Image (cartoon, rainbow, N blue to C red; front, side):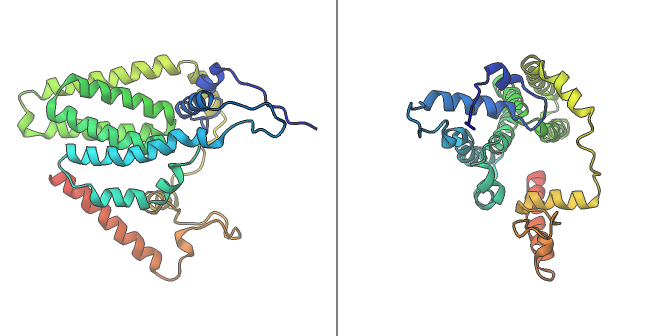
Length: 273
């Protein structure tokens, strides 16, 4: 037999959402990068594609995430040295900053949104909230699952604006501009992703995400965030399946506790600041 690669249209690239595993924003950016810089040869042994070019956008986004983190910390008047080191050493950074998926883009968009949120709250200017809304759209378009992060950040932003005593006179003006930025993001999501919604509802009707959100799930989530690895292994017979519960004795608990204290201390410092 022979290998045959069929070309796909840009309509498929931008709006194929039969499964949420197609990260639309990354797919579009990766294809644009690949189509721009890759020129297929005519020889029988010439490659059909260049994997490095497909991964290049997330590689650049990973390093951009470090710059965005330093900038966001400066906006909020916080030190970012330890956070930058933690990010570089985190297994998720090592993996997702080169992975051919949208997670590396999320690593960039999260600190970028935090910085834009800070600028919007501190200055109240329209441009920061409109940029905030545009980056919200980019993150959601790139990875549908980031909706949880977006909800959390907006709840935090609303809480900060509502409780800041120094901004009481212009609080409603600030909140209205934040709301406008979010409406701008919603307009982009609805307009750009309209063909995706029927496909998404069809996918959800099959109940593909039916696993329970129990205590074991919560432990795995926290462990992933802190260490980039699950707490409980899903296949003990697989030597490549690492998890904290494989570590000897109480070592896993000690590592987990130390990192948890570090993260909670950082959050407490931010809140008290």
